[in-house]
Image 1 (cartoon, rainbow, N blue to C red):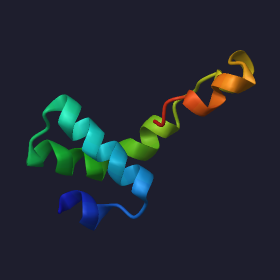
Image 2 (cartoon, one colour):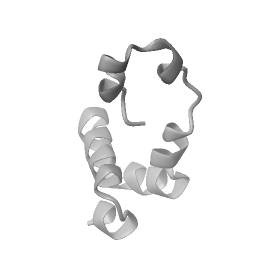
Image 3 (cartoon, rainbow, N blue to C red):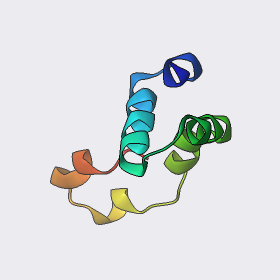
Length: 64
């Protein structure tokens, strides 16, 4: 319910679900990560995917 209440977009919800499952997050840690806006912070990380990956691989870049 925390994810549904605190997110709006499907991709953002899926991101938090994956992170919870892979990191064995507690509810408390999930709440903290939601407040920190981890989804948007990770998405803002600098990368050079668009310059270095061939076009055929650009669809496989991670959603951060």
